[in-house]
Amino acid sequence: MNLKHNTVYAPPPLGGATHHHHPYSLHTAFYWGKEAHFLFSGWPDGDSGMYVLALILVFALAIIAEFLSNVNLVKPGSNRVATVSFQTGIHAIRAGFGYMVILAVMSYNGGVFIAAVLGHAVGYVIFGSGLTKKVDKA
Image (cartoon, rainbow, N blue to C red; front, side):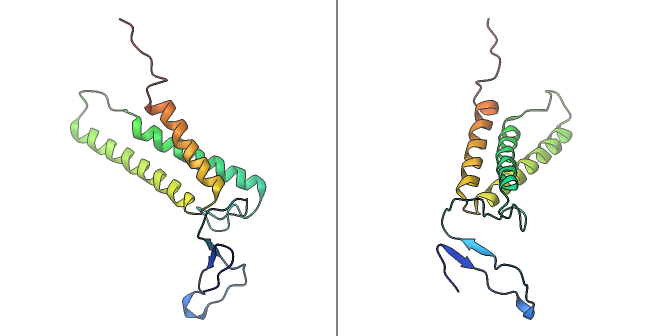
């Protein structure tokens, strides 16, 4: 295994297949910079605009995960089976978004980590803290 400044290069694929692309590196410690690959192969690939878009995507996924964690879209008195089925679907979508955020953070890019943490924090303030909910004054 070749080691170079906190990176580990993946071994070549089995079966003798070779690729003429840059070796895919896996970072083993946090690093800073736009030279990141996460969620999709070859994306954002060092392009500044795409890196910013990727950070916005991670931020938005974290906010959506917080929204889905705190939303109650079921009306009281609804059919129990339909309610459980709907809530199960919402839970699965929330888990999927959460896992996508986790996979992005596993890129060890500092910007991605900050975008994820800020997204969860903003989502919590908006949807989970009660700060934005109207209070009935009696």
